[in-house]
Image (cartoon, rainbow, N blue to C red; front, side, top):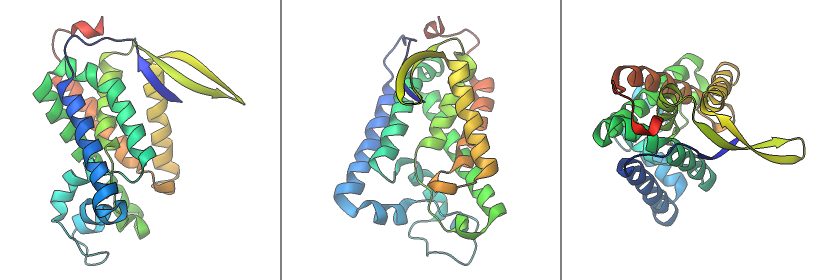
Length: 228
């Protein structure tokens, strides 16, 4: 299922959401036109073995703690960044509208850090190649945004591309269902496949859980006009 838009207008410009998208796109252009994607991932990607202080794996080019942040703004392909930015664009503006600009930025970064730590912990448990494969992408932080949206705007509707056998259908799905189904798929991926296929499922789960907890603590007492 691919989301196209929601039906929930925001009451003020989503300055932080737009800025985050612009920064991610600018960094990706640097990856493609500058150092190259593979080299940039080696430089700024989060390698669990490095963060855990293990004495094996590739040498760290940046302090491992720094890569927790830099990895959130790197991507491995055009489809990778396109999918992440689509989700951030659709769901980020309303969450930012509810939290306010600065609180939303803090929320985004904290969720991203929690996602990185969750994937690192899962890699330590599974071991093997998981420990030395660099992790990149904004999806962990965006997972936190999805959790906040799911909590605060469950009755919003999401226009979704749904493939049915050989046909493509455009269907409005309630946000609680669309995002709930998305989280269940990530949880199943984490339990059954770990990081199979290059997808850091546990980062998505960790970011979503962190976002849910933060949203419960930080959501405004009075709901934003966007919720109506």
